[in-house]
Image (cartoon, rainbow, N blue to C red):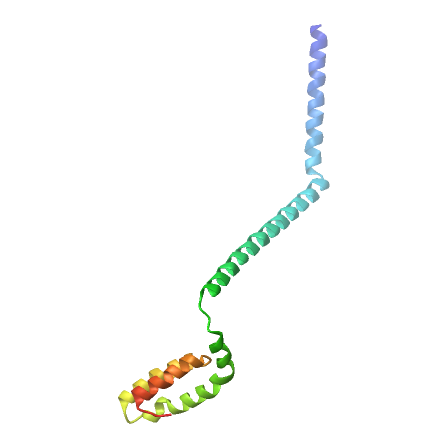
Length: 145
C-alpha cells in the first residue's frame, strides 16, 4: 500500500511538472504575444470611449451653464436689431469727430477725446452705447452734432 501511494505521489508530481512546463510554453508562444497586443488595443479603445463620454458630459454642462447665464440676462433685442443696421454710420461719424488728433493743441481735451475714442472703438456695434457716448462727447468736449 505504501509502495502504491509512493508511486501515485511520484506520478502526480510528474503530471504537475508536465502541466507547469506546458503552461510555461504556452505563455512563451506567439499566441500569447498576439493576445497581449489585442488586450492593450482593447484597453486603449476603452480609455478613448470613456474619455469621449466624460468630454461630452463636460461640454453639455458647460453649454447648459452658458445657456442659463444667457437666459438670465436681460437682452435688448431692439438694440441688437438697430445696432445691426444703424451702428456703423454713427460709429464712423463719432470716430471722425472725436479723433484725439483733432484736439492736439489742448492736452486736456486730447486726453478726454482719447478716452472717448477708445470707448467708441470698444462699442463699435452697440448703437445704444454709441448714442450715450455721443451725448457724453457733447458735454465734455463741447461739440454739437
